[in-house]
Length: 393
Image (cartoon, rainbow, N blue to C red):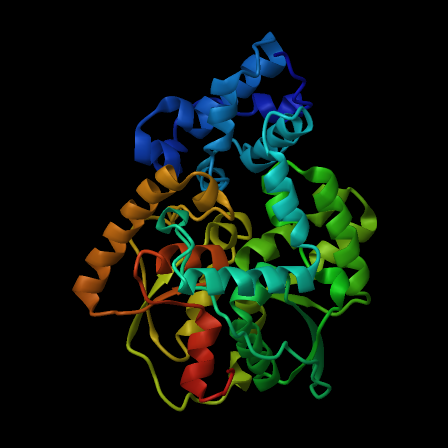
């Protein structure tokens, strides 16, 4: 079938097919297939938009197998906005009913209804304990009990919002409590948004469901008024919030997006306020989430904060994706597993050389995907909280 992708022609023509993106593309590295590389996918987009090629099943496969890690963008000398091209293409495919089936749309719709999400997450955790969830789904062990939600704190010389979101609050709520404790320790009062900020819309954008993503973005913006910074402890959510200006195209959204910062970046400039830890960890391997390293380009702050309580250890793979990709590991389990295997090999070599037993990752998708492979993966702020002796249970 013919399909109008509605992509910006200047952005689509900006790729000069130099190939510098290839080593940074996880699907190309895993398969060696040119069609599963950024320039291969762009060529397919051009064929559909410029030459009237059909958006057939093969074209859909090329687009759906992209992890959307955007590791190609920092490597590109031409500044190709590959993420926007992929999001636009997926929007066109989803609008035409070629991707994102009804069951996926319904599952994503739950993310904006937090009580329903929490109940469903608990039920899924119970099903795991009863061995009713197939192993091929690749889910790490989910919590049955998640403890109380983060509460606002009134005292501090500064004030910041702490965005809690959907899956992060359902599966890693203690990390929110650790982040709130960390902010309090650097003399920052914490505001917590209400139900309107139940989901940032990142997974909807990745799936091509742009209209639902915009509706969620408008709710999130309304839930955190004023001009206080918005601190985020999930790399994927932070990248989505920072892109609201592009998603909505309004001045209000652009002003809001400029207030968003990753928790490590926010704390790194205030580390002098943090007291010495009660204990120090040894070497800790740092795994950079793609949406912190390649999209926000703010991954170095993780090392600064983590160094307060541990010895950060680098992975020599230029931040290559782990294969989580939001819902990618569930939707493309075979390819996600092959991508993860490469990451596991690098981690194993580094841990063998350094004696590190823990991996630090600042994104829930990465953490869950790597935990499912048997690794001890912790959020950096959880490690800080434990080293400082704070109770976040």
